[in-house]
Length: 154
Image (cartoon, rainbow, N blue to C red; front, top):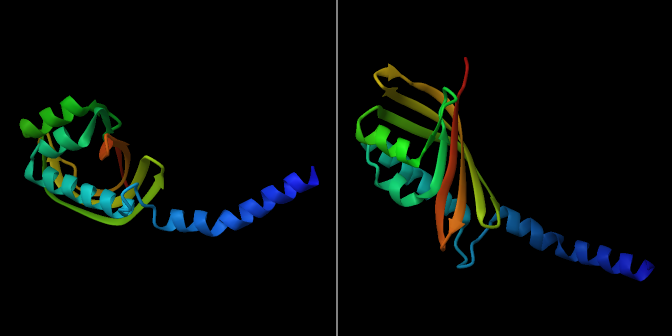
């Protein structure tokens, strides 16, 4: 019994540097840096939102994508696309900062702060927001599954 405990302890000690390294620079099966991939996708999504373009949402979100808006409303993929197409949501600027990506196998979570200028149905939605995006790997591609934005109260 003591030898099993000792062997288990030695294995944990031996694997600590490997586990620490994988947390620092998580890589996918192709050896690509997951953090860089997620940040690039988030930036592409930001650019798409600024243009009022729906192609990013159509291509890079899961079929059951959900967004939780700052007012607490939950909207699905079809509603997000509709809001962009009919001009309900218009962005003048979206500046991301304090981005942090954590990975858990085929799931990645991005937290960031945004400084946003824009309108929703003609109402000003400008301000500072904390956002959370949940990304999942599906068919070898990262897809946005969930997004939540919360306005920072002054």
